[in-house]
Structure formats: C-alpha cells, structure tokens
Length: 154
Length: 454
Image (cartoon, rainbow over all chains, first blue to last red):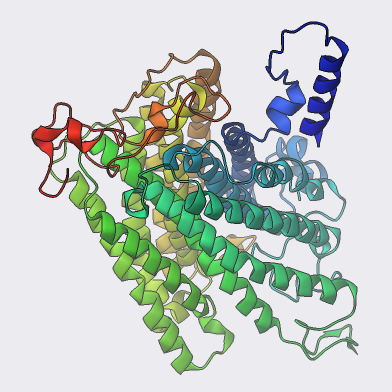
C-alpha cells in the first residue's frame, strides 16, 4: 500500500512540471518505502535477518533466566526483579512464569527464528540470486510475510 | 505474542507443543487465558505468511530460472529451499487446522480435544473429544517442521563446504535424492513423538521402522560432507568453521536420535532431559550454526562489506564449546531420569546429586549467551564500518557473485547471465583457476572439459 501511495505522489509531481522534459525515472524512496514496505527481495531478506537476530536474543535471554532457576535453585537474585518485575519477586522466579518462559522460548526459537528467520532470510536472498531472476515471482506476497513477521506476529 | 509477556496473567505456558487440555481450557492455568489466545493469533498469522512465502519460493524456483539453469544445475541451497517450501506448504495447513479447532474448543464450546473433564467435581458440559487428536495433528506438522528448520541449514552448509573446500560437492545427485527422501519420510514418522500415548505397540514398531529409515539419507548427507572435506584445500573462514560445526552437531544429535526413535528405548527416557539435549543439538544448534555459516558467507553479498574474521573465530570457538557444554551434560541428566519442564529439581531427593551438573549447564549457557554479543557487535559494526568487499570474495561459482556489489532493482544491470555448467566446478584438473563460474561456457575451458562437455 505504502509503496503505491508513494508512486502516485511521484507521478503527480511529474504532471506538475510537465514543461520540463527531464524525465528521470529515479525512485525517491522514503524511509518507509525503502526499509519497511520494500518489495525488493534483498531488503526483505535483511528485514528477516535483523528480526531473527533480535528475536533470537529475546528467546536466548528467556532461556538464561530459566537456566538460572534450574542451576541455582533456591538462591535469590534481587536484580531479577528489575528485569521481569513482579514475576521475580524477592529475586525468585515465579513458577508459573517459568513455564511461560519455557513455552515462549520454544515457540520463538522454532517458529520465528529457525523457520521464519532462517528460511525467510536465505530463501529470499538466494533464490532470485542463484537461479538468476530479477526478483521473486510475486513481490507483494513476499512483502506480506516479512511485514507480518516484523509487525504483527511479534 | 510478545505483547503477552506484558499482560497480567502472563504468556501461554502449556509448553511449546500447546497440548490440550492446558491449552484448550482457558481456566486451566494463568497463561491459558489471554496468553494462549495471543499465541494462537500470532501462530495463525505466521502460518499464513509461511504459506504465502512458500508458494512464492516454489513459483520462483520453477518458473524464473535463467537460461541454461536446468534443475540439475541448481546449487544445493536452492534444492534445499525448494524442498523446504514444499514441506511447509504441505504441513502448515495441518497446524492451521489444529489451531482452528483449538480456537473452537476454547471459545465456542466444541469438544474436539476435550474428553471427560471434571473441574471442582463438576463435569464439563462439552466432552467426548480426544486430546490425542491434537497431538496427531500437531506432530503431523511438527516432524516436517524439524526438516523445514534443518534442510535450509544443510543447504547453506553444502554450498559453504564445497566453496571453502575448493572441491566439487561429493555426490550431488545423492544429496538431492537424500533431501527428497528425507522430505518424504518426514511425513510418516510423526508417531515417534507419541510412543507414550498408549498407542498399539505394533504401531510403535511401524513408526520405529520409518523413523530409523531417515538415518539412511541423513547418513548419506553426512558422509558426502566428510568426503567433500577429505583431502580438500580447506579455507578455514568463520563460515567454514560454522559449517563444519553443523556437521558435527548433526552427527552427535543424529546418534541420539537413533536411541529416541526406537520405541523400546524411548519409553525409558521419554520426556527427560535426554530429549531436550537431542533436539537442541540436532535442530537448535545445527540450524543456528547453518544460519551463522550463511550469515558469515553471504554478508558481503547482503551488505557489500566483510565481517571481522578474528571476532568470527572467537565467536565460533566460544559458541561451539558452550553448546556442547550445555547440551552434552544434559544427556546424563536425562539418563538419570530428570524430567524436563520441572521448575525445581532440588525438590526431589534423588535429583540432588544432579544439581552440580545443572549448575555447569547454567554456567555454560551464560558463557554461550555472552558470546552471541560478540556476533551482534560484529554484525552491526560490519554493516556500517566493515571492510568493503570485493566482487567475489570467496572465489565462488554461483551466479549471485556476478551481480554488482551495490544493490539495484532487478539485480543485474543488463542481461541476466546465462548459465553453462553446474555450480561445483572447483579445482578442476587443467583449469586456469581453481574455480570456474557457472557463467563460463565450455568453449572457453577447452583444457579442463570432461568427455561429453562441449
């Protein structure tokens, strides 16, 4: 959507100075059209990769917190309360939240990092490059997965 | 799903496999309420995007190959992505169905997954379903999902290993066929996740048989990697280190897979840390290492800059030691019977001896976690300040390295290059260089052509 909007505005700008004959067909990408709603497979693969790295760190942080509980059962870590608030009252991890961390760690790692991140990054980057194509078969349908994995799924 | 961390009742907490009734009854535990709903919403969106992406990958590989790029000239990465996409398109709809039925059970009073359940002495009004049904549906996705995760990593590793060994990949056709066989077999082994659900022992034997069959194509792949490395002119770049690390994890995780795939053995170590160790090594660490290999190898292609090599080596060695340090001791925990998902192991007298192993695992995981900060620094620093890369820094044959370093729409400024040969002509006897790009016609390499290559 955003991309089309940008092109429409661009076309209008062209109509205005029709007197000038310098039709330069440069795209004036805004931040949004270039980095967020891109339909270029290279940019989409970068979106996937950066998202995957961020999500991997989130999921890894969760695993470190519950490993702390498993390794040092019964000990108190007062700084835990600063990170996870009331889930870590008095420096002890809440048992219910422990189960939640295990669950969400698994889901994020399996689906969003290793499925979305790995496949999404390298399929989008390498399929057009290595088979010798200008871009993916359908630009907008790759845009949706990356957009959704970036914005909605998270 | 990330929002669910911030709501009062907390995120979904029924395990990543979300078995009912914990996931089907909103009142089952705190996370089964809003947290579970958000989990389902995010998963449905994820499945839709995975399906759209998968269809797109398949369409691109089948329709948009350049002139001369026949299917048997495709690099193994592309074969892996194609097979992964097919697996995804076939298996994700099943998870979609499972999630949809779960939504019905949760919100509309159906009972696909709810058998006779009593809450506070009162029978639930919707009953008559079976929680086992969910497990069947989930694992029908779940097992192909393992290969959806693993095959791209193996594909990336194939490319990295062949390029950095300066040797043609050993057994190209065998690699393709074994990937196809793995993909096929992955659909008929889901029962090995469910040996303990009271299934007929005969059925258990059938699933054991199909599961152990997967060992054959997997071993073909591993032996082909080792044969490619054998007597090769190995360039130990960070990407190559990670690719070899992947092969190592694939072997050690695969060996425990043989134990777990056998129903007679699995019954003893079901739901212990042995399982946790197995799938973290074979699926978690292998796939992550494939991803690292890919990032280090294709970073110049993505950003036009090189990543720092020294930091790459430090990252690799700390990570590989930490991964084995975390997951290898877990095997012993599992064999001693420590169950997974327990909050406090010290509550049981018999597990008190194990506490020092648990401590070691925790320390190792902290070390491994810190090592990833090195990677993050290297990645984001090199993105902006890394050394500018050359056109083809690894001396690779595949055609992505013929495209200009600066990204432009349409990838190649003029014509799309034509392909004349397969992707693995490394160190060909009689050739001028130790690599011949796919774009070089046979007429220009008279000295190195094999019989039948004109």
